[in-house]
Amino acid sequence: MSGLTGKIIARSLGQVGSTLAFLILVIAVVEVLLYLILGKALKHRYTLPYMLIAPAAIGLALLVIYPIGYEIRLAFSNMSLRSFKNPEFGLDQAWRNFRMIFTQPVLKQAMFFPLFLRTILWTVIQVTSHVVFGMCLALLLHRPMKLRGVYQALIIVPWAIPQVIAVLTWRNEFHFEYGFINIMLTRIGLNAVSWKTNPFWNFAAVNLTNIWLGVPFMMVIILGGLQSISKSYYEAAEIDGASGWMRFHSVTLPLLQPVLTPAIILGTIWTFNLFNVPFLINQYELETSDILVTALFRAAFEYNRYGFAAAFALVIFVILFVFSVAYIKLTGGLKGVYER
Amino acid sequence: MKGIKRFFYRSRGDSPFKRVLIHLVLILACAIAVYPALRILSVSLRPGNRLLSTDLSIIPKDATFENFRRLFTEKDFLLWVWNSLIITITTATIGVIIASASAYAFSRWKFPGRNAGMVFLLSTQMIPAAMMMVPIYIIAAKLQLINTYRGLALAYSVTSVPFSVWILKGYYDTIPRELEEAAMIDGMSQMGTFYRIMLPLAAPALAIAFLFNFMNAWNDYMLARIMLQKREMLTWTLGLFRLQDQFQTEWGMYAAASLLITLPVGALFFYSSKWLVSGLTLGSVKG
Image 1 (cartoon, chains in turn red, cyan):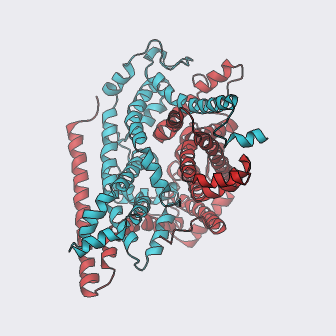
Image 2 (cartoon, one colour):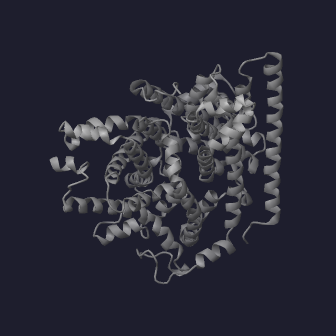
């Protein structure tokens, strides 16, 4: 019973083939239309670039912009499993949805603001740990020494493992009796920890897993940045008599800025939105370990409150958007985006 | 304090004690990084009657391939991998083709709407994936795309387009325009130079973009979970989750499956990690 039969292979190839044929047809029609209208009729200077971006633009419009519009519409409805076919739309529904987010539990007990604070705590813990540990390891690995390549290869192992596998494996290892963490703890004479049922330790387990997962990436990024810093800066600093700490503070850090800033912004957004780790580690679905995005997923697909979830998603998006704009304004972090 | 300060930068003239200390720290870091991964190997080799044990050794004494055999004979492992492969390869191919063309436009022309387009591409990266789930699920349900390869392949390929465009544009920018101009003087058309000169020169970046697309779709759990429900449509992430959910009985098979999926993907990752990183930091470092 391996499940992979000739019939399934044929069906999947047929489906993929017809999808590709359909896509090619649509793109061809669009390109010809663009060519005729922009190029022949209007003699537009930029016909070719518009033709080049047309497929991506259409794809993004259909699969990003349209769903967002649809989501906004959903937020004005009371769609749920019961009213899936004929939901009611209206301002009063939107008002009800948005008021419910802040006044009633988002899931069974979890309220919005504790969830929000936990998400911030989670993001701060994660990004700080990734940068601090990543920086320490990168600085150590940047020194000329033996076995450097071996160390580097081994340390990035967590990044190389598919995330779902890494997370599910950790979830096993948090088992009370047979996970290696508790076995090790009891062997050195400590008490075993109930990682899956105790709210505090469950949140700790989620955090530990993601630190393990996230440090290698940050380390590699920082190491790349370190290697791009010219040695002459350090030589100059040394001639000026700068101590090790001064060199780190006034040469390394500023010159790492172009690498660190985007890495921290992206890291923050990724962590804030991270789904797999908090969702999968939390085997017994403790609401005390949920962050905003996992709560959103549960509200939508376990409680089937689609209209409410759409409103909730918009609130989360606004939070992220405000953060990103503020951060970019404050640091000028994405300078150079326009220049190139 | 001075010792700690100097710890970081003095590469020559370190005392032997300090060098030993650095190696110890790095060995500890390696152990933390690798041991949990090696546990997958040791669990997968355990015989069925000893799956639950407090043994911490990496290769158990009574190692057996029983779990691997049962994985292929009792579970749909090959089917899961096939489903994932077909969706992922379709996705990555469509994504890279679409992105390579748009990136060329963004790199070579200052057309109206270019800056707005770049900012839009960047801001799509801020949209939480979980936020898109509700509308995508409902739209897919209305278009009858649930439980099809089609729906997932289309959804994945578009979601990774913005990132691919960024990588590819950065790489195209480093290719001098003179090459194209020379070819155009020799009578080649604009699209001819794109196809014959830019794409071959940008092969490394195209490979990175393909790999990113591939990995994104290959490792996805959330979208697959809401889009695929039928047993014969499951991807490996869903299949593994099902194995793993029944903790008591299937731990060994779960570990065996994880190992079989991790080895090729991990090897590919190590092989390409240098380019992956250069793709991420491309253009952000000067000097």
